Amino acid sequence: MEKMPIVNLLEQTRQLSESGQRVRVLWQHPDTLVFIARGREYRSEFHINPSDETMYMIKGEMRLHYRTPEGKEEVAVIPEGAMIYTPAGTPHSPRFAADAFALISERKRRESETDRFHWYCQKCDALLHEETFTVKDYADDPVSKAYDKFFGSKEFRTCRCGEVMAVPESL
Ligand SMILES: [Fe+2]
Image (cartoon, rainbow, N blue to C red; front, side, top):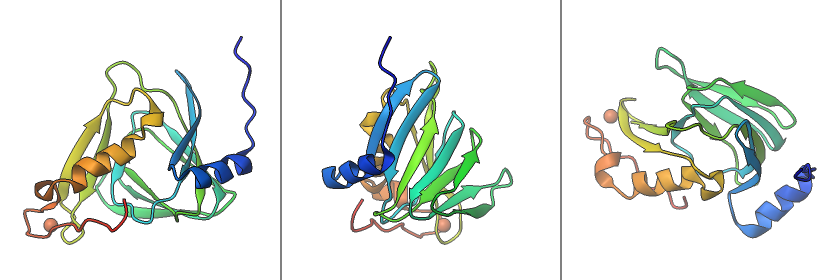
């Protein structure tokens, strides 16, 4: 039997800061995938996950932007020390500072499941672009890969209304 992991969350956040990485996977198994994420200065995408998620704020506050089934954008505020449950399929965009840390719990993706990332126009709210990923290993940081693709293409960032989403200074 594999040794059961016991993780000191504060120690892990320190190591994550020092490494400059955004994500540290604590473990990943078919029914449980847990990682710590650092915030981004700039976050714009909505993630559509085939798995349920819970997000617990170890340090700092999260503003979780999400879209209702009617397509309306709403914001849930999760203070430090609190957690939220987000059902599978909810387009959500976790926004928190670069010195804030969230503990995120999902499960490994099943055969044929894909993750989707959506961007919406900041002027008219139309869907700008969708990226889809098969997430085999969360340590590959699929969010960063989606960002590289989206911000690498002016076409993807250009809305039919004419608005172009700017590339942030740091991704
Ligand atoms: Fe637009």
